[in-house]
Structure formats: C-alpha cells, structure tokens
Length: 89
Image (cartoon, rainbow, N blue to C red; front, side, top):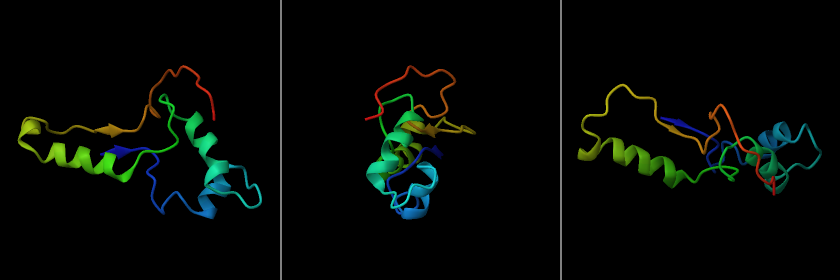
C-alpha cells in the first residue's frame, strides 16, 4: 500500500504543518492544506483513514484473490507524472 497524506496525527501536527508551510510561525492545518492540495492531481489535501482501510479490506477480499505483488497507490494522484493544475483553495 502506498498512501498519500492521511488525515491522522502523523501529518496533522504542528511540526509537519511547519514543514509544509516553510516554517511559518503558528502553522496549522488550514495553512498546510493548500500546500498539500497542490501536490495532488485530485483536488484533495489528504485522504481519510477509511480510504486506506477500504483498500486493505479489498486486497484481503475474494475480489482481489488474483492480485499479487502490486504496489497499490491510494494517493489522490500525488505520484501522477502529469498534473492539471487546480485551485489551491
């Protein structure tokens, strides 16, 4: 599984917000969201934990019984080589 930013404490904390905002004082979720959104091909800043859980459940299901050795990106297009710009808000 290769997720993008997931809306958990791992990225929703002052240290990570500061990294994404260039060290802006008092950086918070709202300040980091546009920067994270600009990284994705889809107009999202992050995915919800349930999006990752759903992919894991699918991989463990009978529907994915012939899926082997795959790197499954649940990434909102962050690894897409070409992105059409979208609004950062």
